[in-house]
Image 1 (cartoon, one colour):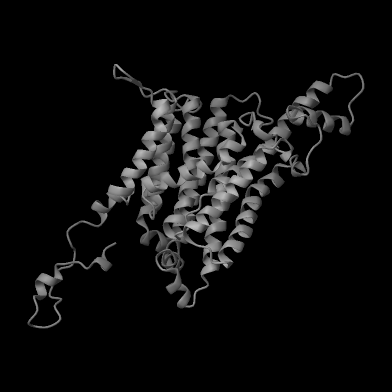
Image 2: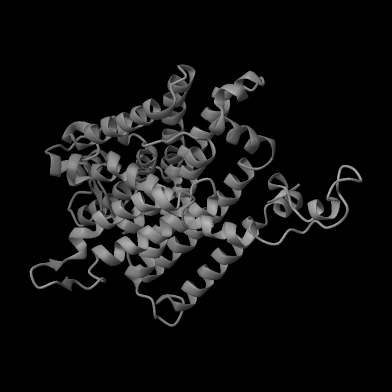
Length: 416
């Protein structure tokens, strides 16, 4: 089965080979494992970019293949980050508190340690009590389950309510955006249990690895991000291939006809929406320990809009296009906003790319939509499709037809 799947999807092998080569090259050039040409901060940027590529692939499946323009998938991404961030903050603070109280004349009780941890974490919002949301924050295993279960359950409930009501098109997009906005506004409150606008910080300091250099931690997260992207790409390539992929694309092109053919459209849409939400949560759980901090601004609706822009620029409806778009825009954004791009003096005005980057991104999106709707990934069509026909021979319908000339023309439906 695996050989049949890979033989029908050679682009998957190409992607895995390129990703593997990229991972090896970065490892050789990294500080911790190689010759040190790439800084630790840049390794973290590359690792975060791979996580963004993973959520972009998930977005491409739900939008480019299934036709659901979700403006809320970055909310699932942020939920995954909050879930793992809660354990990171608790475990790291527990170590600090335990070490500080160890020198006391009287050994502290578990209750005193718990209160001290609560004060350390929630003192910034004027509290010391652990909210109910933090009930499993002392268990890495349970918080990893939350990374998968919370985004999955939220997407399942939201999708079931929306799809059973047959909400489609722009109305569904508005609903997903409203869900994201509501979650973001809730998290901004100090009594949300997640430290309000302060968010969760210090996530780059892994508990028990305080003496491990960040260069080693960063390359470890880079490998984990590359592995997650590879597995996610193969999973989604399998989902969009075969009969299931045909049904999903059919829903995108003509939902009513697919329903008329006897397929339960809502089940397919709910499956795709939930699966992509779970993968988005996993991507977020890998992203924010590399970023070091997460706050409600990360879940704002604008982040999900950026995600749609990445997929559109890369080319929706092709998984590698989503990867190209996310990597291209993410790295360019880091370069422009990080001061890498030199300012351009015009005499009467100086173009500072830190201020003009979003304008450039918006202009790029408009130009791609108008003049290159297939995105950057569409350039590969000229290599894979617009080549000389391979069919030759006498294929005419009767003796009076131009059979040889017709046989040299490859029908569109036979082209890959």
